Length: 371
Image (tube, rainbow, N blue to C red; front, side, top):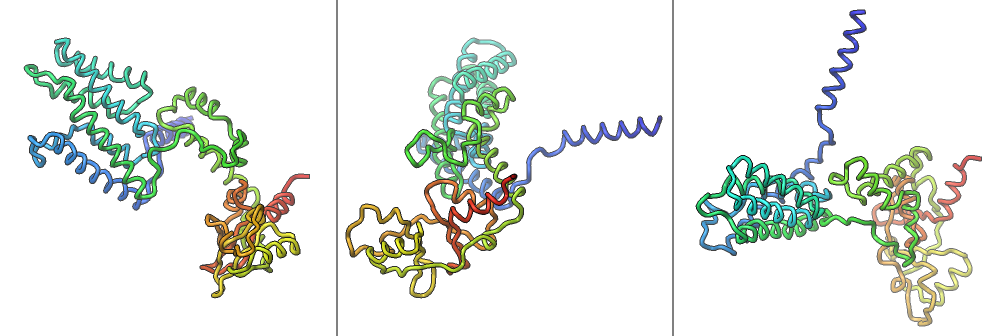
């Protein structure tokens, strides 16, 4: 009996400790460095911009920054995908919180109730504006605690430094995140299908609609932590990974065609048309004189063309995505899922070693379907 009780106690302690431990994966060192360097530059440049708006202040000793900007900077530069880090939330959240504190301060109450009421009003304002930004609560509190009873802050404080500083951080965040390969502002909804129809992209047709995803996030109280598009991308990635595991460790090298019909870069339109007719392909790869891959010409590129001087290079798709022999099947499915690309060239360095078409993919998938 004592051993059973000890086992239960141990299990309970493990459960508690697990709940208190880290709840997120460790970021890559390169990502941590990217975010930290961006945060430092963002704050420094924001201080410089605020000084330009108020040159009477000393940039080195009184840079016009407020403490909550540190938290805003973290969100913008470290977690730019978060709904709480988006420009609307940053600017409106901080500005509305400052306004809430200014209004409560003029009521003439003692500091403690003033601080509590300012934060309460700030949270209500951010919620009503759909601009939930945690540093906004700190803006409200800092405004109250730093206020001089003889000269209470007014709308000028709301504009400078709160609103102007928030705008500067957002502008710098956009520049830094784009320069370092991150998307900011992060899109709220999925990009529209490229075909101009109302149907979702093929890889999104088994994912619940944005309304359903939004309702789910609201029900689980995760709307402030995870965006609708984040959740859609998470489901999409999980389904792709699950499909890849079900299909086994298939790679491009196992399913690609190797004996390829290729054309020269200067192949003229009439000869291209004849190649498509004789071989009944929908895509022809281009082989440069040095043997390197020169692009893909699709049959659709010839439609409506009559100029006999057009060459394969002129008609090639400039945005062709390629794979390597080691590319897993899941990635190939993603490349061929939509209508933008009929085939995927498989390259080793610059040399074309194979081609995977939609027919190849359909044949493989059909072989794995249950009978």
